[in-house]
View (spheres, rainbow, N blue to C red):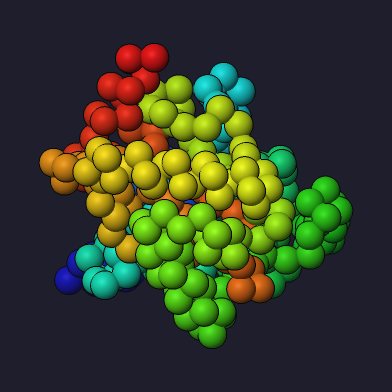
Length: 311
């Protein structure tokens, strides 16, 4: 019975472990693998006679260090990535958030795509320290224990990371701001579906940027598109083309931000769009159509792949 109770307690930390692993990797699949490896390490340690006195500390330390080790090979793969790289989207549907797996639905609010892209500029250890301190609110003694660094070293690492990023903290979404963002997102999708370019322009920040990730396998912009006029025309064209192809949208929270999942006429996942809303305007849009990053959401459409082959 003690073993079962211990297993149940360990499973209760899965959402936290997934959030840390996802923050380190930006990949749903890799995060799930790291969490599984963390539980395997715990099992091996217990079978070897190790007494785990603080289960949460043991598990979070294990997943953090596995994430640091994992990033070395991940960086090599991204150097050969075709087009712009975006994190795999984590989705909880707006009308039924409980449908998402628990480890996905409880993802830290601060792990937006914009935040994860910012972390890409950091070394693996810098990323771990910054993530644990800024996104998850761990104190320096805890960060030091989790990363295996001294407390003084963690302070230096965080200061260096902040300087490198020219940013002092993560960008969490308080409840009031989230509600305002969801209302603006609702208006955005209504306007975009109706094709009103003038009203669409009014919802975008002057310096808005559109990011697209097709991974060389699905249609996407080759590089980011910046500026209200350019992004508005891109969106008007994209939504118009979607209507012609029978694409439908389902509102969702994507990485804790308002967004939507698009489906083809057969109900297969075609893409995911996240909106980064700041001060009452859309500052950035992140669109993922790479089929390799959508499989965890259901059957993936080949509509974009056909268009790629026809080019």
